[in-house]
Image (cartoon, rainbow over all chains, first blue to last red; front, side, top):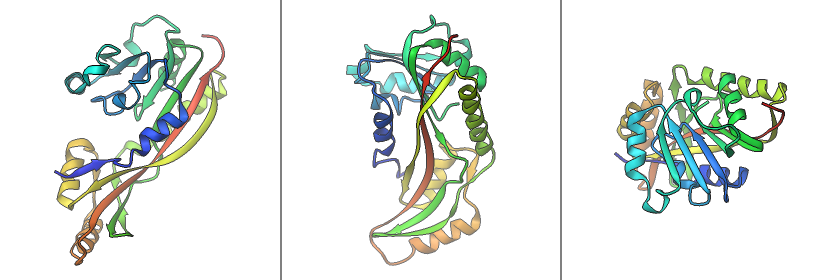
Amino acid sequence: MAVFADPEDTETRALHDYADFNGKCVLEIGCGDGRLTWRYADRAASVVAIDPKAEDIEIALEDCPEELRHKIEFRVARLEELEIPAEKFDLALLSWSL
Amino acid sequence: MVHALEKIQQLLQTDGILLDMHPTNEPAAIAVRLREQLIPAGWLNESDDYVEYEWADEALQHVVDDRRFARERVGTFEFVWHADTLNDLRTYLAEEWQNASIDEMTAGRIEELLKLPVHDKEILLSEAIRIARYRRVGTR
């Protein structure tokens, strides 16, 4: 199958144009298979990436680049049931997920 | 959706940033590119997503009106999928975008254009994405 999503990287450029990820603690809601996570996590201090679909998180864990593994925590979770102390994050990212 | 945004407000530090990206409520456009020429072929049919995008916009407006977040910047960009054949695109949609379909008229137009004797050609599916940055304001 030859379908390529956003080979122009327009989404990544928009992402970095709208937010500075450098040194930030990021919460990504609806991370899916990590498609977007890889595009900013190198700049972030830490990332908690959640998605309710276990099979997508499984793919994300498999695909996670070695150099990012220490800073990304993937969780199978819905936002409503996330148990994390208040005011933990600098930046929350809703990616096609609200 | 408003409850989700209230939860995000709790999790963000004071002055924390919420970045939201989601498609607009306009249908995704399908075109065929023949070398440098882009020829419209139709629109993608989606059964229910657009209603959800409108709800998302309403929920975001609600938390702005409620002074939980301040909208700092908003814009749109085009997210484009490139497919070599109609079959490729339909297979992709079946796997990744289950509630979307291409009607027969649009499919016929695509096939017609792809049959033209041009070497460099492809199908482009373009969706307008709204991106907005909000800053947390107010107390929890």
